[in-house]
Image: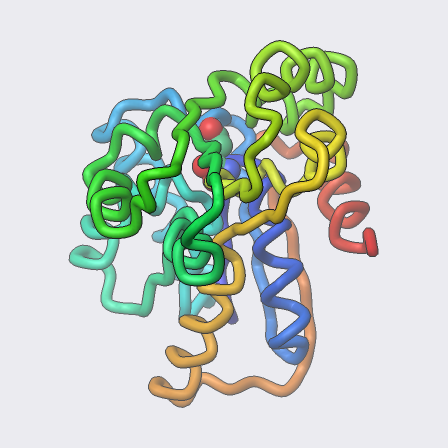
Length: 242
Ligand code: DGL
């Protein structure tokens, strides 16, 4: 079984990519909506929250963990990997992908405070900065997406994102943001999107082969830390889109 978690339903954007490539596995998705947003938590608090989630997923039978959250990955992955002896795959903002595929273009990176202030992000930025890159901290945006507040999301994009019109690439450095790709496009015009989910899939495939963890049957289970039926419905709704 593969255990996946995020601070809510954002990680479903990663899970969708995983399912396309690995359809015959058992999955347990943990939506930690009670602790949403992760982006504003301090490091100690977030490490202790995610530690409990990983323990829980292992107890339920997970043999691999996917951190489908850029913030938790950036802040917690090293500690979790030291503490637990099963493979832990972590997403990261796809700055390298944008750099490799579109070096000479203007790139806008959107992410949470937690991600942008992390050492992991600083390292990534130093390595793959094309000197044509704008970093923007989207305070509160993941929360609005989590709560599905359409009007407020549109207002947010007009007030905060529209000013970046003219960029060519947008790195979606939070797993909630791909849910509103169309809205971001309306604010920015034609842009190419990059997110870290393909990197996760690549890693996951490697880990499965290296650890002989192949499976043969699909099963999807969803659990939400605030027991929200609304989250569960939304999870399956987003999963079925496209
Ligand atoms: N979806 C998460 C991420 O990728 C975090 C959003 C939040 O809870 O702040 O960063």
